[in-house]
Length: 177
Image (tube, rainbow, N blue to C red):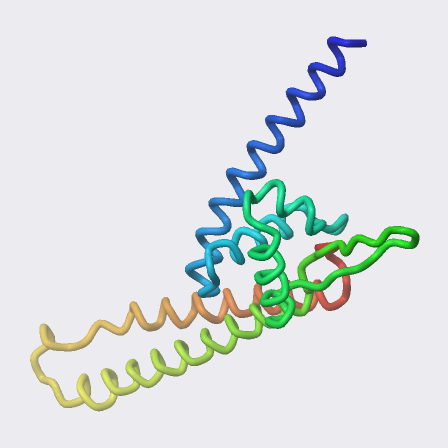
C-alpha cells in the first residue's frame, strides 16, 4: 500500500510540474496576445488548464507563488475584462474561477472580423494590380503575379469557414470547455 501511495504522489508531482510548465508557456503567449500583465496571464492560463472544476483563490496563491493581494487584484481585473467568471458550491465559501465561454466567442468574432478586413484589403490590392497596372503594361516581365493574392484569399475563406463552424459548435454547447 505504501509503495502505491508513493507512486501516486510521484505521478501527481509530475502532473503538477507539467501543468505549471504549460501554465508558463501559455501565460507568455496570452501575455503577448491579450496584452495582460504577466501574473494575470499566468492566472488565466492556470484557470484554462484547470478546467470546469474551477480554480480557487487559495490554489492560485499557493501554486503561482504570488501574494494574496496580487492574485486578488488580477482576478478582479480578469473578471472586469469578462475573461473569467466564478461559481460557488453549496456549503462551501470558496469561489471557483473558470473561463468565460463568451470570451472564446468574442475572440473568435475578433478573428473573423480581422480576417474579413485582411481579405477586403487583398481583394482591393489584387484589383488594383490586375486592372490598374496589369492592363496598362505591355512588358510581360513587369506584370504582377496575382497567384499569391488568389491563394491567400482562398486560405482566409477556408479558415473563416472553419472558425465559424467551431463558433457554432461552442454556442450549441457541443464542446464542454
